[in-house]
Image 1: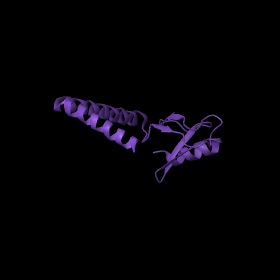
Image 2 (image 1 turned 90 degrees about the vertical axis):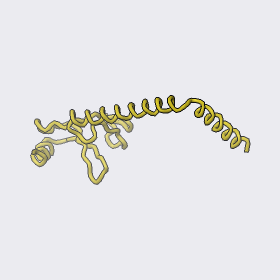
Image 3 (image 1 turned 180 degrees about the horizontal axis):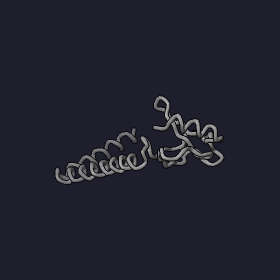
Image 4 (image 1 turned 135 degrees about the vertical axis):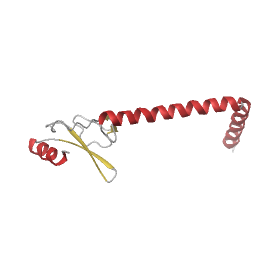
Length: 119
């Protein structure tokens, strides 16, 4: 019970501080937050344009490629349609809103996939 009352008192104190700040300071902080969010969205969309990818940055979720890429690693992607896939590259593809990653292990797979995906 003491924990709840201390949390309520803490909330009341923070509310008093918020009321003392004034409208101008609150609007200034909200404007700063909006600028940070807009900047992040602009950077993300800029990366999408530069890399020709829907998701230019992905995080590895499983340990299926743990010999060189571990769970939690961050991959920076690019979509270069001018050259064919090569053995050893990592292919990232999406099926029904799920993203998958795999190695290209043979040259036959690389040429077949490139011929099918050329535009």
